[in-house]
Structures are given as structure tokens and as C-alpha cells.
Image (cartoon, rainbow, N blue to C red; front, side, top):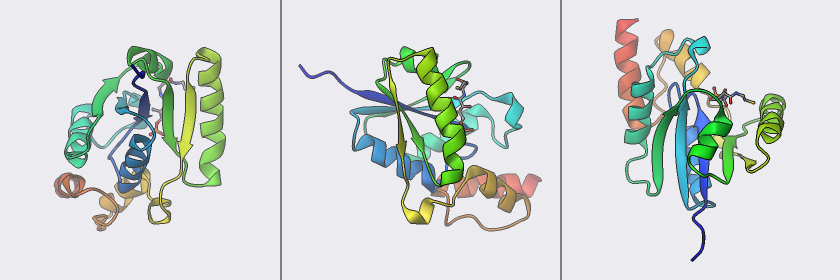
Length: 163
Ligand code: PNS
């Protein structure tokens, strides 16, 4: 029987954007299953709690098969091992993303040479979308509904009211 190939898509997902969904769909065209793993990273001062981020991911991916959601604390290589994944998937929007991503991929390979890091390029309409910009526009009262899944638009509006 063929071995099921799982990949891990790690990130902050604060919040999930159309760019992330683009990468998720592309990854599922390659792998049998995907674990979307929300990283605990207190240094980033997130807008949403970990549970809120996972919930928005779940709602945004309803209808997508062979996907699961996890929250992980600690090293990505340990999360990869936990799920027996063969790869880590990351989105690459522009050359500016490359330097940090390359450094992380090479370091992860040093820590565990047993999996590959794959970079997937989103569609041009998603290539400039980032969670950071989404949050900034939201803080200043702007409309980001064109760049995030529907459940995230609602969650951002709620945050906007409480800012
Ligand atoms: O969406 P982000 O914030 O760009 O995701 C960054 C993330 C979560 C993938 C990265 O910070 C990470 O892998 N964190 C886990 C801790 C870890 O393994 N650090 C060493 C990386 S070489």
C-alpha cells in the first residue's frame, strides 16, 4: 500500500488570509494530507488568540478535505516529527520573503534532515497580501474583505469595534 504523504504548513495565521488559503489548496494538490500548524509565538503580540486563529482557519477551510489543524509550541522540527510529515510548506510571495525563509529552511534541515521544505507561490492577486498589512488596515478602519476569507472579515470587524 502506498504511504500517505503528509505536509505541515506552519505559521502565525494572525489572521489567515486568502494568500494562506491559496497555499493550502496548492499543497493539497501535491500531498495526501496537510496539517496547518499555528505556532505559539508570544513575541509577535498577536491580534487573535491561538484558539481564535485555529477556529478562523477551520471555518475558512470548511469543505476542504484531508486537512487538520494544530497548535504547536516549540520547534517546528518536532511538530513535523509528531505528524510523521515528509515536508514543510511555506508560501513565498516575493524575493523579500526569500532570505528569512531560506535561512529557516536550512536551519531546519540541520536540525532534522529527514524532511524537505517546499515553497509555493500564490496567485498574483494574493502575492501582496500579508497578515501584518491586514491588521494594520483594520486598526485604521479600512476594509480588507477582498483579502481574507469571509469568517475572518467578521472577526476583524468585531476587533475593529473594540479597538
Ligand atoms: O507566519 P510566520 O509568523 O511567518 O511563521 C513563522 C514560523 C511559525 C513558521 C516560525 O517562526 C517557526 O517555525 N516557529 C517555530 C519555532 C522554530 O522552530 N524556530 C526555529 C526555526 S529555524
